Amino acid sequence: MLRRDEARERADRLFRDLFPLCRSLTGDGNRETLRRLGEVVPLRLTEVPSGTRVFDWTVPDEWKIRDAWVKDSSGRKIIDFARTNLSVVNYSEPVRGTFGFEELSKRIHTLPALPDAIPYRTSYYKRDWGFCMAHREFAELDRGAKYEVCIDSTLDPKGSLTYADAVHRGQTDAEVLLSTYCCHPSLANDNLSGPILSVLLFDYISKLETFYSYRLVIAPETLGVITYLARNREEMRKVLGGAVITTCAGKGPLGLKASFLGNHAVDRTARQALKASGPGWVEHPFVPDGSDERQYATPGFRIPTVTISKDKYYEYREYHTSLDNLEFVSGAQLAQTLQVYVDWFHRLEMVRTYARKENCCEYQLGRRGLYPNLGGAINQPGASAETVTDRDVEAMSWLMHGCDGETDLLALSERSGVELPVLFRSARRMHKEGLLVEQLPKEMRK
Ligand code: ZN
Image 1: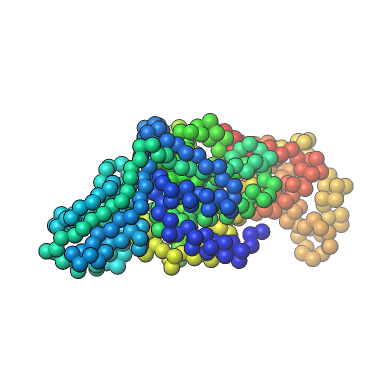
Image 2: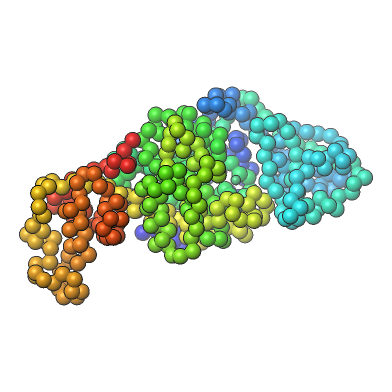
């Protein structure tokens, strides 16, 4: 059972601690973020040198940013990286000089529709520089003045890209992937909520004995995951499916982005978990757009991943602006989504296939204590004090009928209408009695 209050407090602490760090595709902000997340769960950090080819891509030079500002003619800083790291275009090359308004304004990004918000902009693959500011402040700038500009940054060809992973070994080698990204600077729901939920979920899972194995990946979005996949191609063969964890602590509704298969066990168990969480959640169909599911779903990998979100990227006004801040998210909102992921994990663990030891006719359950001994009491609630309930008997009838070594428990639950946890409890009992043999479901084999 997840302790929601404790999860909420841990999430709030991590949000406060990690929010100010300047993360990017590469750099010390990422290393420091991963180091602090590594205090929650042990993480293995890997550095991949700049210039390394990863499939069709190349790991870029490492971005190091120390300071950035724009001063007006009175020497006042009208833009200041020290105030918010969103105010410099992420991956800006170094600049020093004096510019007229006309020239400088081409380098300043604003959002006229959200005049108080500072937008988030990056220029990873084209050498460029620029600033971001609130449109309301931009509109007040003196158009006749000269401005002094400084971006104190380095693009280091001897640098590297950093990612982290961890594996929790279960009873089987079949792996469930939990993937998240860590490349956005001071932005809370997209994307700090993702790594925070991921480490709390992985911490919860790694304290249990599990059927499946679990792989946690924290890498910069897109290129970081491409790098991870290029470096772990063989390992990924064990991965049966999983989740791309992002945007999970907003104020809005819970949501599901389905996998590219749409009806894989990872999807169906996620729908069950969301249904159990209450009404009002929304489903988004798969499109090869969005986050790292795009890489995992390509023909070379074909790993189906779901996303359970709370205010999914693209769906909220504050997305990729300074308004996606610590007031927009909360530990309590994150804990609500974490609860759904925990429920999803428990249901996924129940997706196993059973075969009968003996296939002919029903078992005599009574002599094994698996049947209410007083005949005729079935479907009469409260009629006897037996520990085997009517629902258990119903579940065992379906198991004796359906356990053919082909049909997994999820499919049998859907066919029978018997809830997955009820079916699973009875299957475990019959397994313990030596009546059923446990197997890895076909869908979960690679
Ligand atoms: Zn984003």
